[in-house]
Amino acid sequence: MVDDGMVATLVRRARDGDEEAWSRLVERFAPLVAAVCRRYGLAESDLLDVGQSVWLALLEHLDDLRDSRALAGWIATTARRECLHVVARKGARQRLELVGEFDAPAGDLAEDVTDLVVAEERYAALREAFRSLSPQHQKLLLLLLHDPPMSYVEIGRTLGIAVGSIGPTRGRCVEHLRAHPAVRALMEPEAATRTRETGRRR
Amino acid sequence: MRPDDWTEEELLAELHAALRAEQEVPAALVDAGKGLWAWRSVDAELADLTYDSALEAMAEQLVATRSEAATLRSLTYASRTLTIELEVTRDGLLGQVQPAQAGRVEVMVRDGGVTPVDVDEVGWFTVRPVPRSPFRIACTTHDGSIKVATPWIEL
Image (tube, rainbow over all chains, first blue to last red; front, side, top):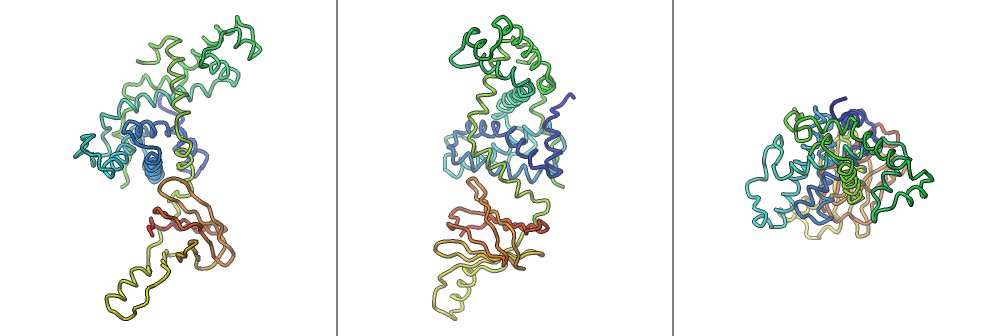
């Protein structure tokens, strides 16, 4: 598995009428939609408006999507366009100097959201890898990431494990994350920003 | 920065950011997306507006046949298999599905959720309150065999 196997599988299952797969797709890409909205400074009510349009578009284009690796770029582009419409409606066009960009072709990923796609895809891959860890190991990592930081002694006591085992287990968890196919796929050049092969309705 | 270059610390910091990004997503955004599943259009037929009392009233005024104003607005959306009649009253939106049969109606508004409403045996349903923002109605018959959706409606 070299590409983003989970997204491809979810798209296929949703296409076949699996509601659970659709829910997982929404969860998978909601942070990206939210990130694009935040970049354009949208209020929460507008964010829901944009989200609704993006999900509707995704639902309608589910059958046309060819390359699921391009999905993140497609979603970011769609979200961005909806954001621009909201911004335009509010008459703040000049402030953001967005004139003329409203109908940019859907196949091109706009430069101002490319970095978001890259970052959010990296996050999504890490979350997917994280969830493939055993519950015990997930718990350990969460405690290690706890804010404010917890000492190994506290963590050992909380989980009922030997303090001396925490370091080595943490190392194994990190190796597991690094080796996960979703994380490996990030190594593919430009994996996240591909948009060209996204199918269009014929 | 690529995963292979990350130190253990960097990878965990990235994971931390990833989990936080997910937590910061408004739940309503996710719920709105999940709720849309009912709108999967594969087998939902689109019903066309075939009657709108507001337009009829305007037409009547133009030819000056009647003077009393219509107190309610009624709309009819027809598809090949199902007709949805809507009547706006002060405290609700009354609906009638033809041919009359039980089922479920879902009201979707632009700013978020989907509200499910039961359709009774004689095809009646009530949506309260009347949606103020643009909305769509999708009707699924009790045996799931027919699914019809209206376009966006703005009252």
